[in-house]
Length: 327
Image 1 (cartoon, rainbow, N blue to C red):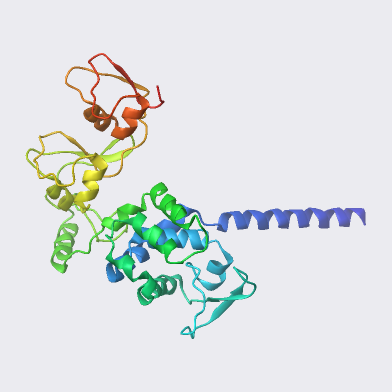
Image 2 (tube, rainbow, N blue to C red; image 1 turned 90 degrees about the vertical axis):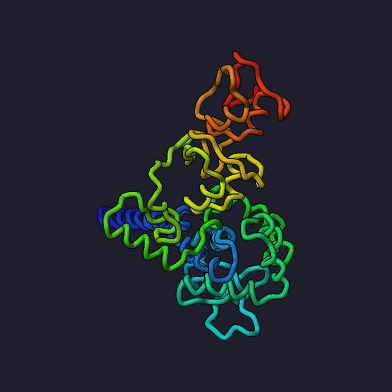
């Protein structure tokens, strides 16, 4: 009997461990969530004008990256409750009150589409659609101010999700004309290696234009390019389908600039980091704080702060600058 009881105990422990491991494997990470649903968010942005970054951030926050009971059992990723006009199925769970009624969807796709309809149909959210599509902070604060959630830190949480995962890139993706799609298909069919499907969507929303011959480089693990003689921010914007305002922001240059670049200047296609991979840099003749910040992919204001220098001042040749820690 002892042997039988021991065997039962071992089996029970094994099954419990197996169940725990299975649950661990099933749990979705934030990155997996983004990869799975970013196309839905982009589609809703292009159809209804809600920034993809906002939709994804809300989905992550409201559904715990798809792991909440509401998301698992009701495909409800935005915490939308039943209302008087809702005549679909429902799911009951405790929230602010006990046994509250939430909308239940057949698919996650339906949840994303209903989220867009919900925001567009409520007058209290109407002002959000007057905001710039790239103003994710305005949208985040506006959703909180309009009562989407009771959490006092709701806006801050959305902004953190967007910035930690660089979701603002998705807001720059633009729909392209059928003629351009046909052009891409033509080059894909001829095996042109310079035509690439978007790494963000897996589809043809954005792509490297066929005439582009330069490689995208990495500095401090940030994507960047080296400029051609005489090109402008607008031309780079068109080539890489990134809003010109974002290019200016990433590279800390004036938004209204129309100047033409010299060849070989570094232009980042995503935000620079707060610190560099290298610890120090010794200034040589002709270098500026800005050129050094571009060289190492570090934000200019962070470079000034780490070295206790006033913004706008320049270091003398031979000065050793800290690139990682505050002096």
